[in-house]
Structures are given as structure tokens and as C-alpha cells.
Length: 322
Image (cartoon, rainbow, N blue to C red):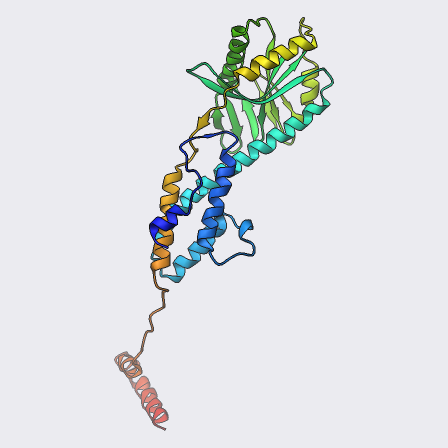
């Protein structure tokens, strides 16, 4: 295959932007296409191979060809790491949402649940993992699926703690935006005064969460149904009122399209360059080094042990003559 054929065989991510629900399938499609290019003769377990299998194989191929594509291989490894991390993040997010969404069936109160709601005011946009409507009000649910301990500062900054504190985002601002756009959508439909509060739910109960921000409630997934049922307010909506709010939010939902989180074009180009260079390079063979034994003996004779070595050389000459 020439370079154009290699690049053309990767048809995934043919568009500039994708909705949130489309990204993971495109990632898997690209991975599968790259596997089939790297292993064209492997038909048995082709679907089980991943980008790290490609990386190991191409690394071995590069060694067999004397390191002819080491520079290209390094670029591909960096690209592959970012690509794999993107897949992991998408899978982790969806897994966390599924765990949280499964817990909704234990909510005792009458409820309407809307999942993956996207709102916009033409300038700002936000994604809400779930909106839960009960007679007492609306709960905005933000799902976090992490293995790190979490600290939310009094200013609403979200940190993953460990050896070093790493600020992940300004979750206070993100939650405020979700609530504001949700209120705006209701207000535009003539609905006002419905209490809205936000809950950040963690799917991993083995971590430690410290929340110092007053604008957000936090809980683990097993506590989420009780958190929603325990929402206290003076409101007591009936079924029709709840359904009306649900319809307003559905109409305001506007799924947006986003570019991929990594440079797909560069990733494809780097992979095509690497495959072309490795496929066109001959297999490397270690050079055969020939030794002149008499020259070696002669050098030894010049040392301070020349007398003894001279005798050894003479003996060796007699032996080899016979």
C-alpha cells in the first residue's frame, strides 16, 4: 500500500464535528481500521486487538529494520497514548452514568428523569448528565466516575488529590451555569419559582470526598435516591405540572456537535508515515565481522608478554598446520 491508500483506509472521523453520543463509536471504528492495516493477514482475533498491540508490533518491526523509523514511531506512540486516554475517558464517563442512572429506579417519589440534556443561550452551552423532576422540585445530577480522592474548595474548584493536588475544573462555575440555563429555559416557557438544586454523585464509594463549596451537594451513588427523595421545599407539584416542566426541558435540549478531543488528522498522518516507512524498509541484518587471527597474534606479540605469547603463537601455528 502506498501512503494515499494507507490514509484512505482510515475512514473514521470523516466529519469535523460529532455529537456526544457519536464520539466513542468513531474512536472504536478508527482503532479497528488501524488494526486491519497493521495486521492485514490476521483474521482470527482481529477484533480483539487494540492500539497498544499495534504499537508493540510496530516497535518490533522497527527493531528488525534497524531502527529506520524510530522518529516516526515516537510520534505515533505519543499520538496513541492520547488516543487511548480519550477512549478510556469516554468509556469511564459512560460507565459512571450507567451506574448512576441504574440507581434512579430506587427513587420512591413520583419522578420524571431526563438524561444527557444539553442547553444553550447562543453564547454559552452546557451538558447535564441527568435532570430529575419530583413534586418538590428539580435535581441536577452531575456524575463523577473517578478513583482519586476529591477535594472541592470553598471557591468551587475541583481537585483530584494524591501526591500532588491537581485541579480538574471549576466545578462551582460549571454547576452554576447548568442551573442558570435550566432556569432560563423554564422562565422562557412561563415557569418560574421551581426550586433547583445540584448534586454531584460519585460512583466509587472507596474514595474520600471533601466538599467545602456550599452551592453543591455531594453523595455516593447508593445515597443518590435518598438524596433526591429527601429534597425539602414548599412546592408540591402534581403529575401534569411535572410533565409540563419535562416537555419544556425536552424542547430546550439542543445536542451540539464538537470536534474530537485530539488531533485526528495528525494521528492518521503519523500512522500512515510510520507504516509506509516500515513496509518499504528491508529487514536489517547484523554485519558479519571477520577477524584476521594472525594480525591478532601479531598485536599480542608487541605487548610486554611478547616472549610467552611468541611461544604460544608458534605452538598454535604448528597445530593449525596439521
